[in-house]
Image (cartoon, rainbow, N blue to C red; front, side):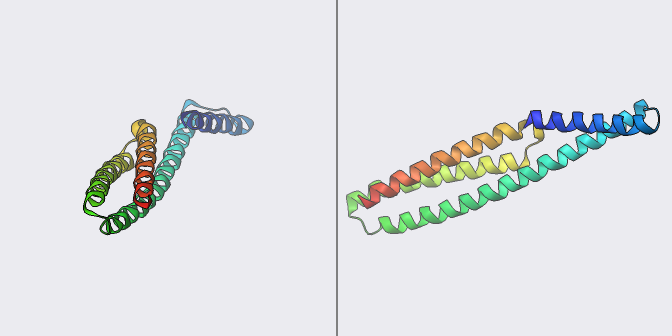
Length: 142
């Protein structure tokens, strides 16, 4: 992602220099303006990508919350021992869900410097949550 940002900046600056060099002499001010515009465009692009990610991940979290709720309901039909074991797993899933949601909120409000690592951390947490849900669901079926 950082390479993409730098490529966009370099291309914008090079394009600006080329444009201005064919018509007139390029000044330092011209380069500053073009660079500022490229940086702002890059910032807007990254913000849009972050919003898409947060929206997509929030939808996934909403869906798995519904699945956890269904699992909780299905556990009610189990015997006392099975019910208690599944309930513990469901409670653990709910805790994982809360942690993942908090990480997503942190990622959504993060600046560009922390965004990538928080995004990756959120994806990793969601994957663990999904795997834990799948294991609990399989245990309920067995």
